[in-house]
Amino acid sequence: TGQVRDEFEKAHRLEVRSLAFSPDGGLLASASMDRSAKVWQWGSGGRTVRLHLQGHDAIGACSCKKDAMGRCPVVADDCSVQGHTAGLWAVTFSPCGKFIATGGADKAVIVWRVSSGKV
Image (cartoon, helix red, strand yellow):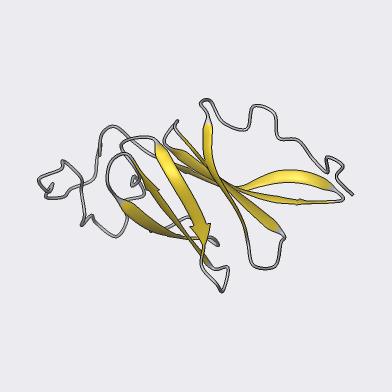
């Protein structure tokens, strides 16, 4: 019908670079230059952030061996601080809708579980 169905004002702190709908259309993923991706659940009852995936400048308390890019590819199982170190350029859902992949200026591609936000 060409009418605006919903508007997500101030969804991120910086510009949004990529959007993707889940295969069933019930979720919308957004990727931003603020180093975060969000998975939104939306419909006639409004919208809520189902998952907020954030990047980090430092690894903090995690123990790891950093690679040449300064990333921590292998971390302890109980470590939840993982993510991009630069702005995101792309986000997409897997065909089954259980995963999203994000990519950005840090030259990394990260695959996240939609159900938990874990890498």
